[in-house]
Length: 103
Figure 1 (cartoon, rainbow, N blue to C red):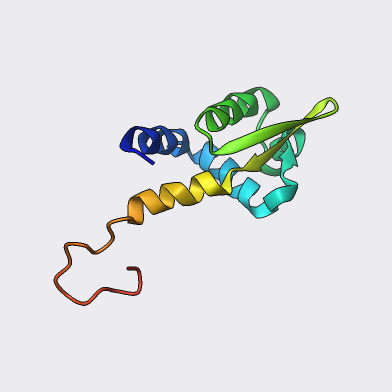
Figure 2: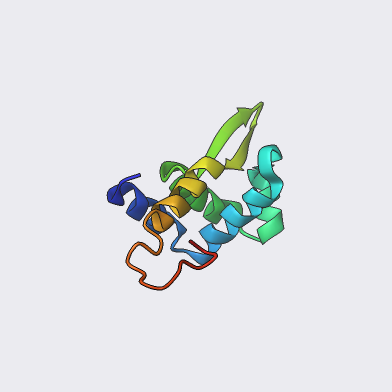
């Protein structure tokens, strides 16, 4: 992942509501949730939700699949792990003390 991609993903997460959506979708794993379920779980009006889901989808943090007349959203866990990896790739490189458990 390059810096531009990371900034785009962090920008999409820079909203409490979008962060809550991603955390919720992570909890449901491969099952994901349809938009109406997300709306109910987080008490978000559907019109507001669609804007946030579109932002997260464009950033590649969630993906959507059509199921009949519904759209099922799932967290893109590989993209989320790549984002964490981007942050941690040089963990403790400049540390002069022994590396911590984090590294």
